Image (cartoon, one colour):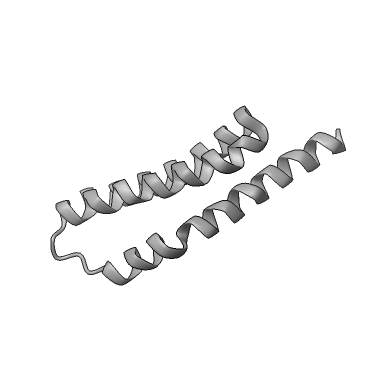
Length: 90
């Protein structure tokens, strides 16, 4: 139960905080957001490995380490694009 809660809360934090960083720092948020997201999920992964030694997610963890930052940059750029489109629409 604790592992599921930790997993869900870390995913929420990894998604919400980059949005706040983009709103606060504008274009620089596209750099800060992926760094936060990548770091948050690495910390959550290490905690989940300690909390549940039988967890078998090494392949997924390795894929995240290699390619997760690309997805994080894409997500933050998309959030910034929506934010800027909304600013021009008003």
